[in-house]
View 1 (tube, rainbow, N blue to C red):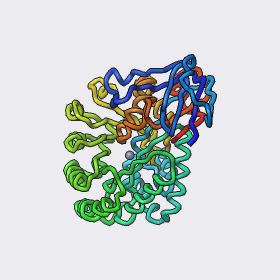
View 2 (view 1 turned 90 degrees about the horizontal axis):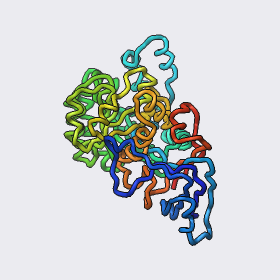
View 3 (view 1 turned 180 degrees about the vertical axis):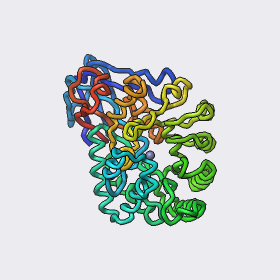
View 4 (view 1 turned 90 degrees about the vertical axis):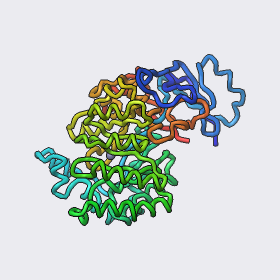
Length: 411
Ligand SMILES: [Zn+2]
């Protein structure tokens, strides 16, 4: 592997000392930007950085690739800790239904939504799913994403859930984007269990989980705890069963209603609880002092016109917060982390620095790669964004809709 020197960097953003951990409270807004900087990469890792005036530190100039980043910012690549990037077909016809007046829940009730995606996925061969997902991975990479968590959950049968997770396993092998896999069998109740919800929970626990564990197909277990979907009690049992098979919890909670799922997640030491558009005081109490990361998904709020997660309340209570895309064909057909940053600033009143940290270092911790990724730290993997020429760091979330990323370098 060729060593790399990036020189004349206008601003090197996201510098953290090692062993920093996720950022919370007032620290979330801390962002060190070194102006007129260089960064060196050796064996795929960040080996050195500093002011251009101190560049004499590099003694071996042989076999060195040099990038001139004049006028550009360099920063850690985004870590998108919540996505459904593997799916069979886009669902723009439901988008039009919603424009014509149907709600997301109403579309779900008439057989659209997640069940629509499940029907399409069941018919699609594994190879095609891999090829489509690889294209999406390239797209999100071009927008700055260097790591992504991907969920199953459009299978909803033993075979189709395994198929989805095998697709994710192949993506891990074929893409240079860092990927974590989450088993989301409990995404919705399939047609055949419409009147027997308990029967499906049993299938998840007794048939799907043992096979997934045996093949080592997932790191995390997820469930959609929501009215008309899975109850807090079912969530509790599913997470207990997942833990027995070594799967940690990362869950969907409080998108439309408060059902007690946050407390259940914290009880199971969940890595993250995601959505939280609805938030009760008891949820804040449960999260405070826990290791569970609260992840907001503002692109979903934007697309569905539902409330945004009251993230300032979470930050003010010293709860670790991350931001992710929720990229999926139904509620968030966008994997653009730059847009997530823009929404976080304009709709959730986060500062550009807070939004950036929530999509890099805290996103990395929300998928348990915070020790290797998510910041400019000596020894971390050199997964980097080089921006286009931009006037300032805050220009990125300000100029929403514009792709400010020139290249995403992954090692
Ligand atoms: Zn989701």
